[in-house]
Amino acid sequence: MTVGQGPLAILGSAFDPVHYGHLRTAFELHEALQLDEVLFVPSGIPPRRESHVASGEIRLRMLEVAIEGLEWGSVDQRELRREGPSYSVLTLGELRQTHGDRSISMIIGMDAFLGLPGWHRWEELCDLAHLVVVHRPGWSGPEDGVLAELLQARHTRDMQALHSSPAGHIFVHEVTQLEISSSAIRTGIRAGIGPRYLVPDGVCNIIQQTGCYGGP
Image (cartoon, one colour):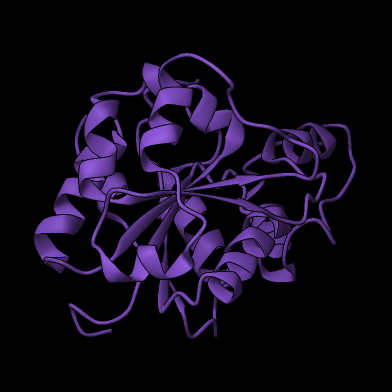
């Protein structure tokens, strides 16, 4: 992808492991928002949660296998290589320097959005990228407080607004909710329940080969 071309979005997560919920969300947003590219960004040192279970190397391998052949998807390793916590504001700042005025969106879940005031330098995020907030059917956003004010100031329903400016808007979009979580997959594996059909076959093979999540 040449720098400065169509809209780019990043999907950051522990991907511990990557599963079909991650992939379906990326697919639906790629289609709905007419994104040229989605960067999958595995976190290195999580600033707001416990350490990862699988190593960065294994999580990277699983992610690369999961999106193999996906023309519009690629893996960005910058947070795995960076020393210190994986702050989103640093990642967005680096991407902004690389991509100039290209439209960049950061995909986050509604639960993450509700916790945004606890993020490092969170007030700067909308200066660096659009926020695409995904939610399951029936979920509603904040009605008061600082996040409600942020939504009132920056919310748009116009997809073209994301394409025509580099950053600054918040776009809320409903996605298919697959009741899959990485923590539940890990718990199941430890109990002897295989992850097949929750993760791509290649990811399942890596989990079995490495034993990264334990199990009987």
